Image 1 (cartoon, rainbow, N blue to C red):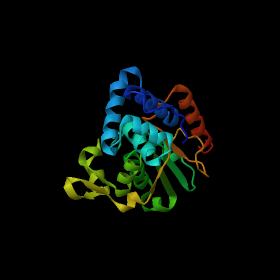
Image 2: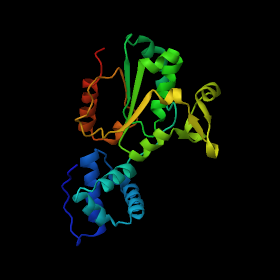
Image 3: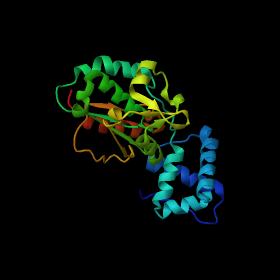
Image 4: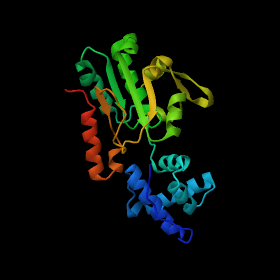
Length: 243
């Protein structure tokens, strides 16, 4: 990332906020409208406190290309609202119509805004329920997100019970075991299907060498401007297996 931000120490905090908002729009594709200005300011204030940097100093760190500041800013402006089997009708459709129709070959799924891994693990459960133990040799699921902190949660695979969403008790007992602090741990036979990597969707030179049979791209496009949405969807088309 090489943002072009104009800022001097003489500028007031409001101009620093403008510069930060411009960086977020240009580098992450996330737009905060006028009605969201207070929300954006609150998130920047929280980031400033956590890093012990003023808004002006945040801009300066971005100008210098500081990766820690870039990643931290990307995390605070991303909305990581997720839970297992969110919008269950999507997963029901995949279970009933998509997975049974897939070709008899090694399969690759992509959860393109996986947050803390809830979506990727939910897909893995569907796969195990359809293919049984053969899933381990048959399917690989990639979960990507812009937030390293969320990906660390996915790697640890420990979740609070309120993150389980509309999960039935049979599935809960089958794929989880109790963890500390009242949470639950995703079992290894689900976790082994999933790999997690950091990826900024708006940086359209994605590093994939092979195409995917299924791409989940949900609850993220509405953060982007229309032209960027279209570009991301076109890239997804490029990385989808024919048919």
